[in-house]
View 1 (cartoon, rainbow, N blue to C red):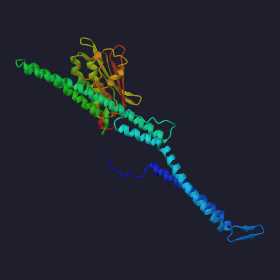
View 2 (cartoon, rainbow, N blue to C red):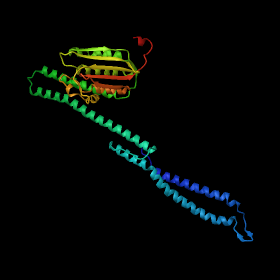
View 3 (cartoon, helix red, strand yellow):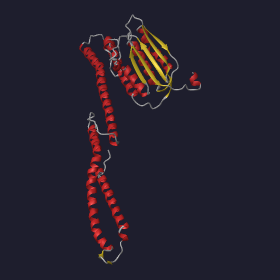
View 4 (tube, helix red, strand yellow):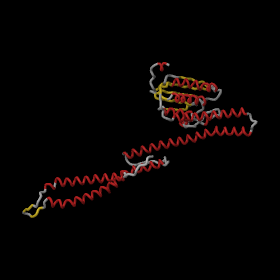
Length: 371
């Protein structure tokens, strides 16, 4: 921060301004008396039948000392009164300054909470309190995210260390089995790291936007998750219609893929008729993607927490789940960066219905649209 030379305080400048206004007003009044009254008094002694009458010089000698005394009094009153008035006016600003210093020192829970009716200072204080409230929530969310990420990353690292220690203690142990387990643990750590990077990227402002057809992304995402769905005996049913929007193609593809992967992983158990339905189209001026799947019953109180990082329903945690609870968190971050809305609802018979609504864009003209 650039160092600044110390100057006169705002209170001193306001007090001097008030005093200057008072003195100038008094001087104008005295000038009016001098110009419009004394000039009509004749010069020289006037003799009347009633005795001596003072002339202009006599009145000036009597007027000037009184005017000087009044001017000095006006200066004193202006300075003292201006000092106290400036203090009362600037008191809210001082309170906001103190709150700013406390927040800068790390006390994000502090608020100005300026009482009184609405004015410029109250508007500033309310805006400051709102900003600090959002900052506090953001910092708390980042701290919670960092703690959860550290915990999730520690698990594969601790597992890897344990496997290596066992291999060192038991040199006759089958190395192929140890290597296979190490490979699985390493893939889980890599997948988790990549998910964290995608989540961080999705939370930033999109520098470049392009027109994207969500139906094409849905078809590509279906092809991606189809091997996983077939291995679990789950049918994937795409019901796609053209739905144009603007945004990042890679992030929007990641969004649809995450929704489908969650729907496949958190579906009915093996040997049952599992299915996933993905629908794209336009509705009320928005391009929508809807992914629906059966599965375990999700309590209504838990549904709002599913979009938070590392949040998983206890009934949906299984040994064969490779996820870390980041799927819907990534979806929520991508939706927010694209100016859309995300709605997660629990099906009464089990499973979820996830709907993403993004700002619609007109179909581009030319060969690209035909393609």
